[in-house]
Image 1: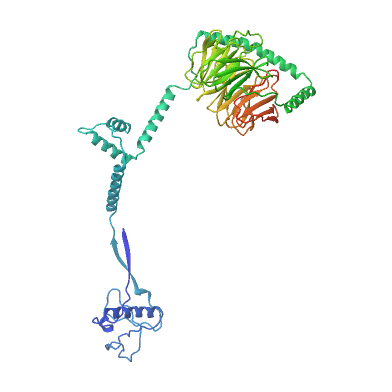
Image 2: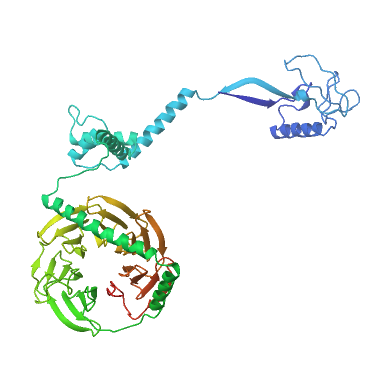
Length: 539
């Protein structure tokens, strides 16, 4: 690289010693030159006289009468001939400023590159000193292998190996290990996907599972046929009659009121369930007790003792209090310690007990046939027990977090589960397939129920909303922003599915008309959180 230098070179024809003797003070000499140049730039005559050939005097006057004249510029080549004087009043000629053809050489590019490389090396060494490397030699070798470097060199000790790893990381960057590990994992995943394409995975089930599914097929087909026949007859009823029935239901909903109240336990009531004939109510409590009450007198009938922990749920057998003997299986309860106990109405002690699960059992539910019992376990699975064979016939996984609630379709062919992973799933019990994925809630699903029509599902979640799902369309058809707190219970009415009931931690129970989803009634008698609700069968 070269730099061009410009230098002003305004000179006069007279010798410098004729104008200003060299023995004069240098400051005076410089100031005179500056004054001369300033006057020339303004178009004035030069204050320094031009020599007329007769030799000037030191007093600044010429031999020709002392007239002040412009000095002509000297020849750039340094010629000795006198230049012709410029006319008075003319501007300074442009030739007074000369450009030089001389160039100043800067540092060579190679030298700059060397300096830059040296600075980069100093910076790299500084980074190497600041990098933290494990002192475990086995981990150092593993990291070297991950970077594609030899894990040991000839004569290299642990300290040298550690320093070598530092040098590598200072060149590649501290995140080189993470990038390399991520890339290797991605390559392994790609190779695995290529070698093992996605496919449905099956495992061989017990013979009892095959028998159970054959039973479910025969049972559900008959009930589905009866349901469809009933719906067909219902649609043959004139529209005016059906509208009148809906209005009657809505009037009944608006007239709902408190029928009775009772202190059921010293600890919170976690679950309640009406008997199939509607004359008894079973409650479970955090005190570990299960109690049976007469309705509507609210008089205690039985106190069942067997759990040593919180009791999370209690359900009636579908035939209890109707065709089931009091000494037979009438109730099932689940505890937070993973216990599931079976009860009769003739004893305060359990008549049987399932093997204790390793995790909490939050909910249990009877299949409509009464032969099977579903249990939601907090090991991310739900189980299906055959009560006749007294064994577990299905261990169903699918949720990524604990399964919290379960409900069976009235036909008996489908089951719906809700989990703490914020999703719900619909399962075909006849094949074991997940036929619908309920995605929409933002928080765990704590309650789920089927409509009597067999294709509508309602779910309640910690996101304070209830969602209506249509199995035929495989989508959510409506979202009810029903409460200001966590929704812990949702229920369709058992007769025709014409209304929905929800309860929440906000202390209220709300009734909604199915179809328009209009709020019909708000029941606010409790001052505390509601953990669950259930409807009496004849309502």
